[in-house]
Amino acid sequence: MLIKLLTPLVLIALLLSPATASAEDNMELQRLFESDQNARRNADIDWDELSVLDKENRTKVSAMLAQGEIRTGLDYFHAAVIFQHGDSVDDIRLAHSFATIAAHLGFDRATWMQAASWDRLLMYFDQPQWYGTQFKIDDDGHWHLYDIQEGAVTDEQRAEWRVPSLAESKARAEQQNEN
Image 1 (cartoon, rainbow, N blue to C red):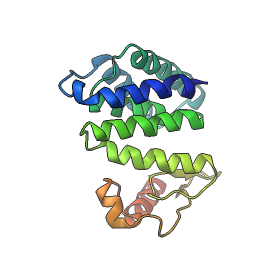
Image 2: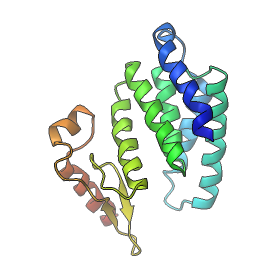
Image 3: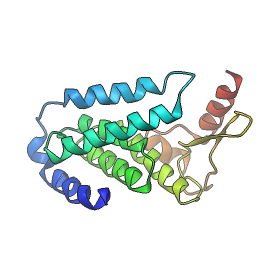
Image 4: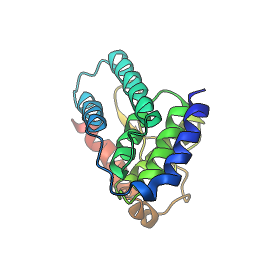
C-alpha cells in the first residue's frame, strides 16, 4: 500500500529534480538521519525499541516527501538510509529509489546506498547479494558476509559504486568477530 502511494511521488520528485538542484537541505531530515545512525552505534541495541523508532522515522519521512520537503541529493540519501532500515520489501524498494534519485542529483555517496539496497532486496528474496554490503550474525553471535553471487559484480565495479572489495568486506566480518 505504502509503495503504491509513494511511487508517484518519487517519480514526480525525479522529474522535478533539475529545478530543485539549488534547494537547501532539510535539517529535520538530517536530525532523523543522525538519530537513526546514533541508535545503531550502541553495542546493546534493543531491537524492538529500535524497530518502533525506525517505523516512526519512516512515517515522518513519508510525510516530508508528500509535503515536497525532500529536495536535495543529501535529503534523498538520508531518506534512503532511513528506509533501508525498514522491515518490508516495499521499504527497501523505496530506499533503492531514494538512493537512485540522490545519485542522479549528484550526491556521490548515494551509489553505495544503491548497491546496499539492491543487496538487501536480494536478501529479502532469499537470493545471494551482488556487492557484498550485507552481513548476518549467526546464533553464536559471529558476523558473516551474506551469501554472494560470485561474478555478478567485479571488484572494479564495486569500487565504482564506492563499495569495498569482497576481500575487504570479508575482513570486516572477521574484524567484527574479534571485537
